[in-house]
Image (cartoon, rainbow, N blue to C red):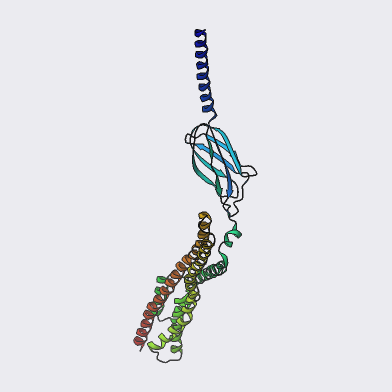
Length: 334
């Protein structure tokens, strides 16, 4: 009887051990579960349906799930190991690379948030009232940049500067003033127009058979310069003003946004850092917008200003050379 009882106990122990082994094998085969809820980043934290969830192992194995009407997702039977969870949905920003470690028999709850992509209307709504002066600055800058580019391209001489000066010098050497005037009309541009005025004043004195002084020719050239240079400088002060004012409008939007953010902290505390960070990032958008307008505006202002200065220096140098040549020729004829 004792022997029979011992045999029964031995059989029971073997059966129990076998059951434990099979249970462990079943647990290893079942793996773990990854589940969670996906909501948006608004204050209401609305659930998002139809989000594609990809759970990718370091070895490349991939497991997928999709959120239901409550924003919940669940995927069972994932082998133990380290994974990266990524979520995708059209109209929302992708979230990739959220790590999770799965253990056999484990239930891993991984809530995630997605930010809805902005369209052009919702994006500009973030700027608040500062949007309107910034929009006016951007339109003004673009308008006058295009207008100044067109003006400078149109004012370019149709003949190279060196070739133009050589042609004028050759005509004056032959004492053919009208040929030099025709060359100026053919070349066009501020330099040619200014020199043309001085040549016509000299030609008029010859027709009237009177002596002409260097100061009289220079006076004609300066009068012509007063017509040409302001045309080149026109609207440059507007570009300079926009380049200065745009960052200030952007800073104004940032300051008002920060005031609103800290007012929220004073009323509700810092219980939701994500909401606070979102408010601050939106406030900084205005500074970025102001700099985006100001930087190209300042670049083009400096470029146009350098072009004007180059024209002024060129007019001064070439006109002085031509005037001296005219006066020398006049003295030689005398």
